[in-house]
Amino acid sequence: MTRHASRTIQSIVTRRGFLRTGAAVATGAGALALAACGSAGGETSVKAGERPAMLTFLDYTTGAELQLHQEHVAAFQQQHPKIQVEHTPISGGNSAYIEKVLASSAAGTPVDTLRLNQRIFTTFLSNKLLAPLDPLITAEKYDTKAYYPHVWTIYAKDGKRWGLPYNFGTFHVYWNKTLFTAAGVKPPDDSWDWQRFLDAAKALTKDTNGDGIPDQYGFGWSSNDSNWATFVWGNGGDFLNKEMTQCTLTAAPAQEAIEFYADLAAKHRVAPPSGADGRNFGFTRGNVAMQIADPRMGTGQLKEAVFQWEVAPPPKRKKREVLFTGFAWAVHAQSRFAPEAFRLATFLSRPEFQKDLADRGLALPSLQKLAEQYPISKSFATTLPVSRSLPLHPELDEMRKEMSNIMTKAGAGQVAGRQAAQQMCDAITPLLGRK
Image (cartoon, rainbow, N blue to C red; front, side):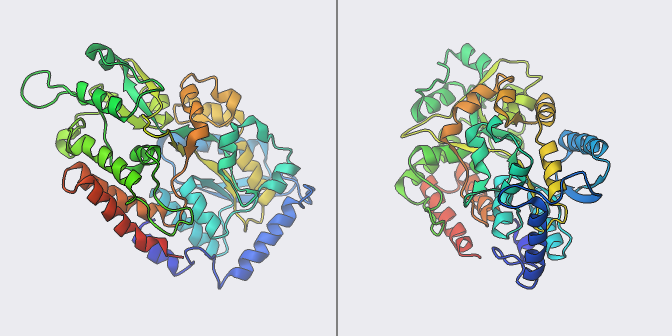
């Protein structure tokens, strides 16, 4: 969340506690919602579809994903004519979505069915905006065993279930098989480590026309922590301590990883330069040999690729740990129509929706048997047991922006990698104490 958004929201809610001035509203509405959902034993007093209901559903997706949502919401309303859905697209991404949901909650007009990623999940859960789904899951006899086990556990916390995951991914290395073969570089395998990764990136960075400027690069470097988190974790480092009260990027394992990653661009120059000169390069263009990304690159952007490509787990050093990504649907704690909001969430998680999502190249399904129909899922699924999330601190969005800005400077050679680690801790430490 941006500082501007944070200041705006602070006039409405606290960073962790939801609306002291509206606590009675939140508690009362939440109690009504759970009464409608059912008791701990799973018996419901109101079943979805038996009464007229009006659901609100904000949508910050765009393009093909927004169209997909619109089609399936329309299908939902055809099957459930008593349930109307006010489906409103918004722009601005995560920050705008969080701000609007918090503001509408404060005004007593909650968004009934919510879309979560892990950053949004952390914010909404800390502000007590999510209804526990366990009573609804029991009442609806929802099949929880159809999911990849690790994916199913992601949106559970404090012994309760808060979201229904509908896709999944981990961050892997996409590699251009055509370029590897032409250069005689050994393909990635389970044994490859940082040195082999660096050697491959160097061998695949080429000046083919002799003008002194590479026409092909080994690695698509990015300052985004989605790309370099695996190096920190794989070297035994981490971003924060377990209590999320202290930055640990200045500890030796994390410092070494940050230095190695920054040097790929700043020292070894195996990545396209930043700025206009680097925009003619990219993995999907076929002139960058490796790129760290989630399944969406393979299911979408690379569908029309004119070269051969494959995916492999990231290189490891001391161990291999990868970043998990995935979205889920949830129900607002204040919803007056919790059973209906849950019914919409299950509709947008059903196999037909997840298959449509995958067929359009937007994500991999979270339902295991369905995902296994897509060959690319195999590699990503193998790393689910060693996948993890970024630290789920309420200020994660702001921390990521600070770290990305500093890593950009490190990749450009403006600060050394170890100095960048210190600057990151200096930048995010003040955020850790925010409530």
